Image (tube, rainbow, N blue to C red):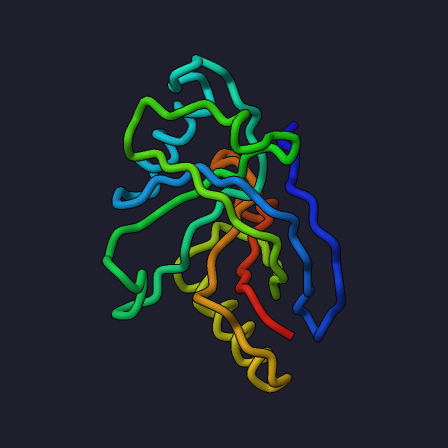
Length: 172
């Protein structure tokens, strides 16, 4: 069973859930399509690293939302991140053998999140993103950065059973 990263629910606004996340360590691949990025990251946690150490899989898998003409902001490269287990520190993470894997530390932060089910098609994600940003604007809550997609299930899970979320960092 894949462990889900911990967070604290700090409030609700309609279908938005506010959450505080602890600091996280991410293994990230950028500049490839999702299938290749997933394969590279899965190999990394399966032992394709300097110490040949296996790292447990956690959920969610994080990808930036594809926003036509504006994102990603610095390039049109895609990225995907696996969250490292909460019990790991930066020194516990093995060094990648594949230079396309980067290890990043993300400080504690508050997110606004809307959960939805399905295959997380571009259209579905875009509709949830619009709903999230419009609700935050009406409540005078400013997003920090751009929204991203969090997927919790394997690609083999039937679409109707898949848990997905669109989240964005906020400051309240």
